[in-house]
Image (tube, rainbow, N blue to C red; front, side, top):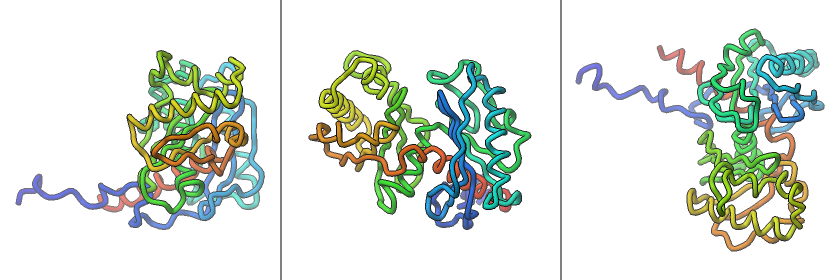
Length: 289
């Protein structure tokens, strides 16, 4: 067998949630960049909970990469000054952004300042301590829910749908994230993107009663179910705190529909977990070369 015919090392197939990963550090830091506020916290990776209070700073306007990077640095400095901060040696920092993120490069800007397009966040955040990884904000929330929340310790494919200013989606299969699904940007009942009709902001803007909003969400989830069948829909975003007002009207789906459990901390928790796993993957892969 020639060298080129050799099977790829098993380590190349490693992904987050793999049992072959080395043990993650006990804590990591997650920072969740939103349209109005940027929140950060120290995350206990054993429990999926915050260690100490989260820190929130208003997101600068305009939210350019340089301006947001300054806020991220300020939050990180404060968190690292705390007694239970992760050690510098094992520091992993996850940052969420409201856009498509592939290999730490931002490739969409529908809900973020256009100056983020093609921004290489590795370069932008290169002066921060530790190893920094960036990902889509809904993906972070979905990963957190799948590992610690409404999908914890359960096999199968789950989709977290975050309802806020827009509509985010995150698909997780057996604990592994399938990133950047962005199904809130689909066309839905003649409206494109769907989030103009389905988001929590749309409900407020159009003054839609809760029962009608629940029925709109029901139809949207049926639409998603035809495109990507899942075992469970997990409904997140700030509106999930009022799930009893609209989820009773979301019926008739094959998949279960449940509220998120981590609420507003999901993005922080998922970002920290993602960053810690990416750091562990990099360590394993570098040791095999």
